[in-house]
Length: 465
Image (cartoon, rainbow, N blue to C red):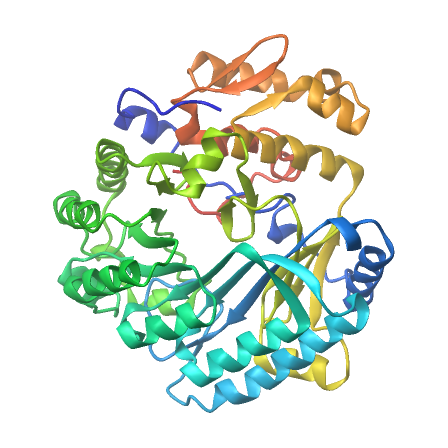
């Protein structure tokens, strides 16, 4: 595992790698999913899990997508339903129950779950009673293991200290607050006004209630942001001192995401300003004592994510970096993406399609992928690089019965260019990501992406830094 870089990342290096590429929460990436993978393929994957050794030994991770938001944030690229009619959640929870029942019908009751994440949309759109109903449903169907990671995304505008009591009572031990930027002008420009004082009070309340970890999300590249204004936000974040910080680059794709059409391109910071914001973010977080976990994640040294990185136990799934061992993921709700065995699957993206499938007693899966042997070998290398910062030849050779140096001969040749730039080292044991290369680990992983090498159209991806 590479240590943190001892020197700041130069703007020149950041500009050199200012290119688009996948985030590798999976490999192959979700844009490679096909509609030929149906609910019947998903059913077979579940049946194989139940009949195989995984049913006894491999725990599960659960993801539940709650798509509702009361108001639209203009930068948002998530699958969401904007509504102030909270009665819509009643029907949605009923259909979630049907989807859970389908899973327990084919997997059996009481499968052990070690990781649960509620995402959205805004999961805190649900009332306290609705959250109790949802968690009760999940706990009746699955066994939530003691010591697991149970997290929920929180819109600070929808919670107070009393609601934090409810979340703790329900078993959530990790919170993720969507902040994006503390600057009032930027907040107004993206239609998400939330005073910094409100967030500070909520984080303090969360600490008083003993939550294991508090995460804060930030976005750079938003309208009206400048390096100076974002510098002030970074200062406030380091004062707030959350356990984890996720720092994302805004990707302006108004042709794909309708809410972004309300953002005037002229208000967006230019490329040099974005590079400056990223450079100052890296410097500010590291100088404040945060560990650079990888890509866009930072954690305090004693946070389990930072500990897992030091110990080489870091993993990666559709929610990003995780301390949980590699495991199957059941994804519940509209548009959610899951993984069972050597398959990926995605649910219907609209409520009507989602409801219709469940009305007919079918899993709402509309696309997915059955991984080939080549996919699995490449996934092993990519995840090893993304999580452990290395690819050891012998480990891949033994696990997959291949001569990986021959198998990836052309990729190794490409890596030598990154070696010359100081991002990796190569010796007889394998490939090591350097401390500086850790900032650009997506570029290293992209070398092994067979689909990306045959399709150079990357506009659908965010920038790699």
